[in-house]
Length: 102
Image (cartoon, rainbow, N blue to C red; front, side, top):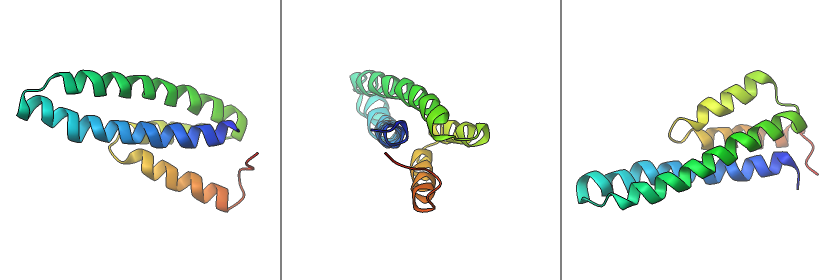
């Protein structure tokens, strides 16, 4: 599996974990008095975010992302729903045959 495909996968998983943390775990903590939700979801998201950054670095080297693209993907990962925009851009790159998947 190419580093590009691994990046696409971890990008999507990390995006979902961020949304779970923001829209499920945080309300459970603050509105339902269930603080363990943020501890579990926060730890999972933290591990996935580290994996995302690592995989972004690997994909940058293998797939030829420019520094500007890699920086944009990193910044988008910090925004809610940003990783889904990244996924859309990556799919467009695949369709335009800018990246060979092997």
